[in-house]
Length: 456
Image (cartoon, rainbow, N blue to C red; front, top):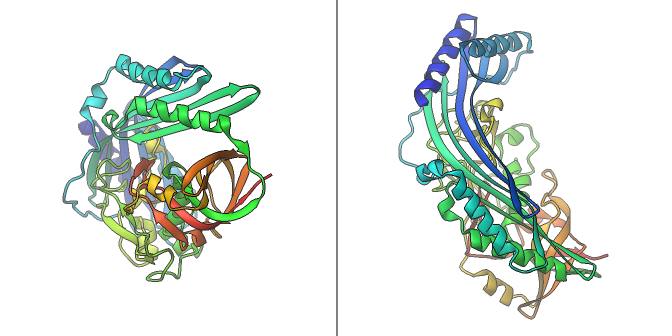
């Protein structure tokens, strides 16, 4: 397959150069996606989608165009080239465009990003593990799995440009999302469970089913929270991911720094968080969803400390934003996503984090809970998001449990958690030791002080 992708890349570069492009970048990809859906406890549909696609960037001076399409024949390559050249010719000059990446040979290895066994797993085996999850979750009579998705993706991509970049990578991806509902005496509980991996081997489907059941029954027992109180709050990894994505990932982006939008634009080498917090951007994390020797424009990836003991150490850059900042790309140009591999060629490169890892603490979640006199463990928000510019948030709490004298006591819902996430990073009480891979972030549970829980 790589040979076919390389042939398309060479063809596109030659054709675009002949039509007057000064610089050309080609991203070709083969993707295969298998989806198994569950509705009302029953697997009802599976799909097997295969495609080969081309994303093309052409620069005529500082006039830049981008076009993309699935590829079935040489005629399709010609159409993409013609469209890209046409777009470049009518596009206004981009004063910030300098050049595409120059060749930089990557070294080292990256582990657990491609699983041959997963690629060869037959559909009946996938159906088997899905049914195991559903049966486990529904082992209590009043729990029903409403819907679910198990997605298996595999891909190979080749990235090349007219300056000599010529790199490739292949990987696999597993994404799982199931929701369940329970009802009893007019009360309703809902639970959601997600999982991300590059292999099925890391996923315990019985454990996932048990967790889905537990979360569903917890919300069934939950009472509406009354009152208003400032307290320590533990947030689990699956809900932390959205908060870190909307704030920290935004603030360290070279694009937002260049545009003076990042609240940390002048904070380099200054304290932005508690001394207990260390955050790493690791493009080569073993088993990372976005791990590879190179990013999606062919630049070698690296492991970079973003926050070290509370001090902001680095921003991240793709090639375009690195030229603006008069620095080098940090290998953070990405097209790929974390939940699907389909149509990765359709998107131009963006400046984005690779895999984020937070250095874990030395306390289990149970120990963290035991050290809080009065607080709250939050397991589900309606949508975990904070304003990227200011950090402020008011999040609807869908599932949480009050902590009393070091023990989990009363499940609650219908509350609002209010605060500022940039400030919360400075008020970290504890960091847990157990990490979970949530999308492209490996996170432990974190306990924050001085957040406000507001009831009805």
